Image (tube, rainbow, N blue to C red; front, side):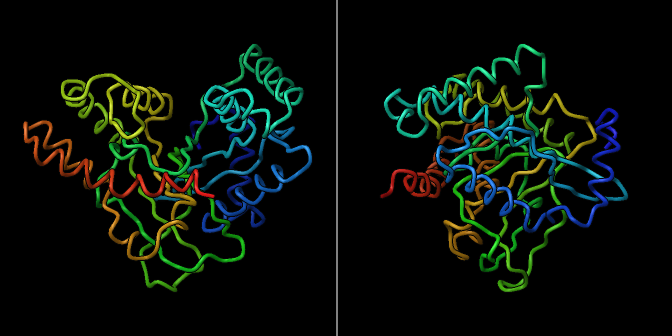
Length: 297
């Protein structure tokens, strides 16, 4: 909480104490449901008119950690990326050009006003980027298995966030109605691991950022800069988000992506090519079928 300036600090402190805020076990479903309702409107509300007043909250050792949703800012960033990546005709089929221009102009006014452009949450659709695995280790993994409840909408995305979420724990398959797979670590550990991996990746894989499945120094540097903008005593979380609804219990239990990335980096550092390639193939075998669902009919 110390990372926030007034009046935000007072507002988020009151929010963390509120009984009306979405609890962490339901918050992702609430956020997804709100987004789905906006996009189902005619015309779709691609970017909300006002910034979200919700956040993910975690309490640890007497300290309150808050990660604002920043839905408006993240929607702007996502829509800008969508327009850059899609042909004009495809983008227009989703959002009428006049509306798209109004959204783009509003975002430009936001930028010119000097507003913060650093989101507390990074989002990836249909897969977990390989660079997001680097800041964590296997022992920081928390898996909760359960059937999706009425508020747990399935959505194919994962998030990498700072200062996030209430406690979840590993337990029986029917212990809670939600499904989660997440990793949580300290900002210091996250930065140290990324800094250690950077020269190894640069020497072995280069700086390119072309293939989404190729770990690169360029992507790690981008992640390092993002981590470096937050309070040094904050926390970092990797949340599989809606991706857990695309995988069955057995697949989630067997998902050792973070451990496999750690072994791959160790193999690179030691020059053990066969070990590195084996771990990389295991990551591809797990995530390529999931991402292929993006274009499924």
